[in-house]
Length: 176
Picture (cartoon, rainbow, N blue to C red):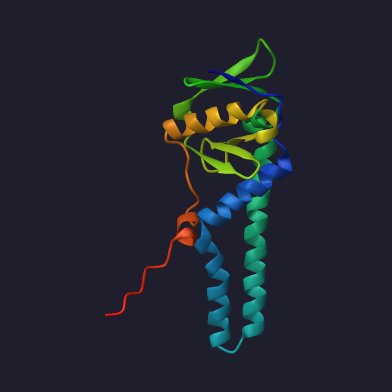
């Protein structure tokens, strides 16, 4: 079976939000540094300076990543991810087509992992480069199921690091 989708263009705003969320969860420990700095300053009775420094570092950290992703979305080498494409997906490859004659094949081994989100599929090449396939570009429900089957068969689906943690069932307390 081969899936042919409708034409879709990745939105810059969606890219910024998704990439920043990826950074925030992958490098969760970076959010602890401002808290640690505030606690150190507070230990010396300089809680005002600690609060100011912690807020400033947090703002600079967020600004740094927003500038990185905004620049990446405008860079010549990554412009191709933000053009409108139709996708033809089968067991061998994903073909990103600009029109009926021009396209770029992507082998499945180029995709590092995939995530299934509320609104579609995210196929990651690396931490910040991905293809987003929203559900609305598929013409039928069977196409979505076929893509999920392909992703499972190729072992590309990755859960969030915190997903299993929050879904754990508590251990049964047995009294002796």
